[in-house]
Length: 152
Image 1 (spheres, one colour):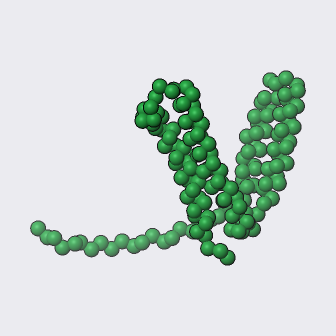
Image 2 (image 1 turned 45 degrees about the vertical axis):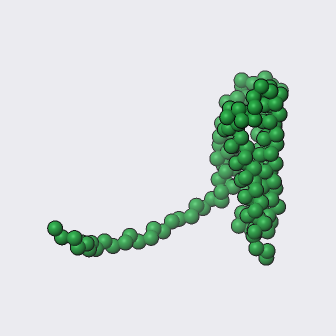
Image 3 (image 1 turned 30 degrees about the vertical axis):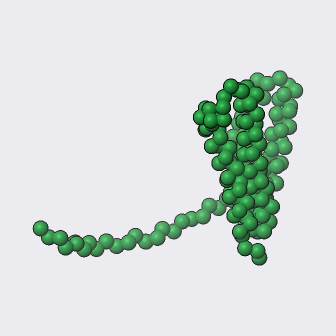
């Protein structure tokens, strides 16, 4: 038996050149959404009552205008400092909703299941507890990450 490693000569493949998409992501979103929405509106217009059809047509026009404005945004021009308030807001939202849902779950259990002890409540509704705690922890992680960012 020969325990010496066998040397194989394989050439490493060349790094592939990837072509970046020509369309901007927001323009692609606008075009894709418009194609789907216009077909849906065209299909629904004959079926709906006239007032509802008019409202649907108006909402479609507002969506066209909003998406056109959105597609004009240059994502490369947005700096990291401009996104800081949005990141803080998202972190606070996650933490707040996690706490709110936890309070609503406790109120629900106290109002509709007073016969359950705290341990029984957790045993029966552990899945919801875990989701709400994870939502709050995710928000706290976002806030902590934002607090540890170096100042420019």
